[in-house]
Amino acid sequence: MLKEACGVLGIRSVEEQDISRMIYNGLITLQHRGQESAGIATLNGNDIHLEKKMGLVSRCFTDNSLSTLKGNTGIGHVRYSTTGSSCISNIQPFKISHPMRGIAFAHNGNLVNYMDLKKIVSGKGRQIETTCDSEIITHLLSDHLINSKDIENSLVNVMGNLEGSYSAGMMTGDGDLVAFRDPNGFKPLCTGKNCDTCMFASESVAMNVNGINNVSDVKPGEMVTMHKDGNIERKQLVKPDRKHCMFEYVYFSRVDSIIEGKTVYDIRVKLGENLAKDFRSDADVVIPVPDTARPAAQGISNVTGIPLAEGLIKNKYIYRTFIMPVQKTRDISVKMKLNPIKSVIKDKHVLLVDDSIVRGTTSKNMVNLLKNAGAKKVDFWVTCPPIISPCFYGIDISNHSELIAANHSIKEIEKKLGVDKLCYQTKEGLADAIELGKNNICMACLTGEYPTKKAQEISDNMKTQKTLGRRYWEMEG
Image (cartoon, rainbow, N blue to C red):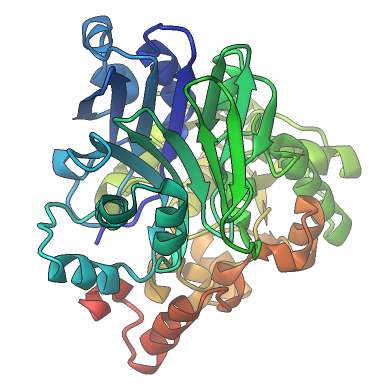
């Protein structure tokens, strides 16, 4: 099974204009959420046109290809896979020719009960052509819509069978554009309207680039329907139980996005400030790991008075190493990604700031860069608490054995990374910075306590069966 943490969006314009360029612009702003492939589906009359390719958005689509995607309604998707094959058949959106004159569907998230649902869909005679859980949701929706022709009732029935994260969008050949979100609200999803254009997207930045600034969150368990006349209808389908992914705020989302009414930039600054309140350092300079740790480093500098400097320069043309699907590729890219400024580092006691430590590969290489550039000491402050458990909701943290904090003490990690002092954010400091209330945040990867039943069962089985190095779907399948 392929586990995903991607980006999704949908746009409708009341005016008869082609909106493929707007979708393209939105996908460019969501590129950080997926760098493997991209897809766009548009509705022209009652015909759904689909184009999807491997690679970055700018390489997947040209002016000529966008001009063939006619219509004033469409959805788009950027994707990364965490395991398994990376191939064109798994690229979203997915399209089915019936009912409702066709469906195009895309989502950001991961279904914990994928294997169970796959058996149900296969048992109904449906041919499953990919290893992507979005295809399963598409089939389930199609089955219900064939019988009822009612999107709201169909979604209620389908959502009742899904466990996991899904911030999703659907477009039908009848002209419906619908966004919906799982009742836990693991992954972000927002919607907005400006003049004659309405839109939904994984992050608000995708709407800002298209001139839509009147933005609000799709609530957990909510359906938002964008009608042909430009009206937006909102319905709460499932009782919400908020468990927003803390990793979206710490690392994954763009710093200029607004999620659940909170600006990601402000949260990351406060993460740094909270670290500086809990720990002390005699460092000469604060150096952030670009780009996500910059606001936190600023917060640390604000509280401590230690000057902030750019000591590591990022090659902007290298993919984000954490979301690369292959460890070997990840190792090579770390070495190509960053270059030290020796005049900032040489003979200095450096306070290095990063958003998280997952496997430790990137962190060790960064510390080596600083030491080789002449740093006399390196303290390492991390804005996320120690990650000790897998994530089953769509972040690439799949088993215990690859998590450095699950298998080593802080002193042992200090030695492995080659740092003089390692300080992690506390869970209390994390919750305080996000300001949504500790009970409304998913911290399963920090605590081993999961908000959904099957995820907890799988994690417990991985421990009792001593299969800590296996992916959970390998156990299931």
